[in-house]
Image (tube, rainbow, N blue to C red; front, side, top):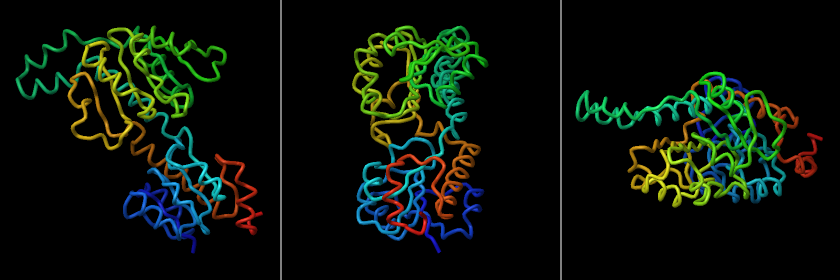
Length: 326
């Protein structure tokens, strides 16, 4: 029976889909050595944690790495391709969850929720209420979206149609303007936006995209929300800006180092919301991601190519390894 290794427990519906199709096991730990060792006998691995390149070295049974989600940075694509392992993902399935997180974070920052909640509990009613005189509404502000894929578009739709925000975006394609969305260069966007949302993938071009120079271009009250990947932001530059009161605040769900160390400076700012890479995780999105990854897994087990194949150049190599699938 085929062996399906998942780095994490799957949604019950996804597990039920795989019952009978293979032996589903969950990794005992997420360190590189354990994953590489336990993947040796796997036919398919479902991915919610970074995989080491060593996992693909000398593999003979492994057919596919199926990403439980959209981002492919957890899979070393070159190593997988060289090994003849198919890589697939399930794009867009958590876009709504992430977009709702963005609005939650923006509202919490603008309404000074962390400070209100802290002082209400520690100092009483009036102490909490005092913060509200500096609170602000969302309506009428400009939200700038960096990266306009499925998540960026979901953010833009909710922002424009649900909260009456002005929406601008920057993206590699810079296509024709959409309904209620204007496209700007990255520098114009950071200058004009009251809320800047990072939705872009991590690539060589986006690493360090929000650097000291671009933070200096932001409005003094601007909010920065990162739901992409941690290295898109220059942490030293952002910490310096927060220390100097140069921007209004930040909501950060992803970090260059995860988990974020408990003594990290980000924890020391009242106007910074820190969350544990949870923007895309809800009961509904976990079901959609689980079912999507199970669907892709079942295709591979049925000797078919996954719908969302992300390394098509591997197909010839794959068919040489598994000639019965040709």
